Image 1: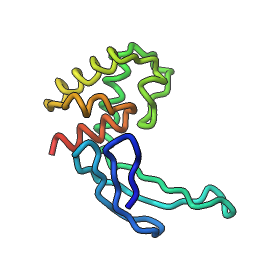
Image 2: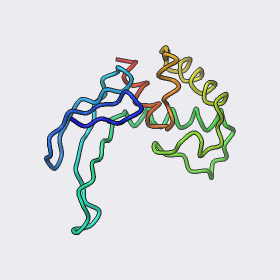
Image 3: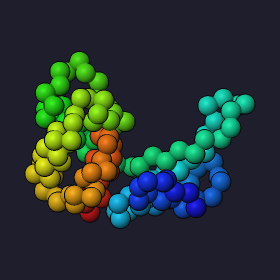
Image 4: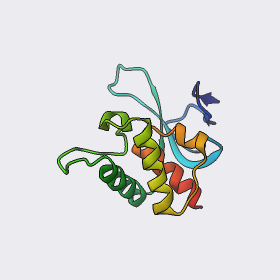
Length: 131
């Protein structure tokens, strides 16, 4: 059992090359891929979890964040981009979450909203709430 500290994320896994698993993030079950990878043959194995958010959702969340923060088209925004890297403060993050709720017709609990730091985390949460 692997778990991160300071958040409510946990993953059940066993040390295999790749394992499909269930990821629990703020009490929402998300599809995930758990893998153990090496960056080069001599490097130790690294534990990596990637959630399977719908690409369409990630793109839509990216577009909403880009619009809310008035970012130019040349500014790169990916799923791994943190809101703080884009210059968003806590008020901007609240406004982004409100816009996501409106756009996707979902309700995000305050506790969950406070833990969203990247585009992908927001998309994963949206996908889990839409089910």
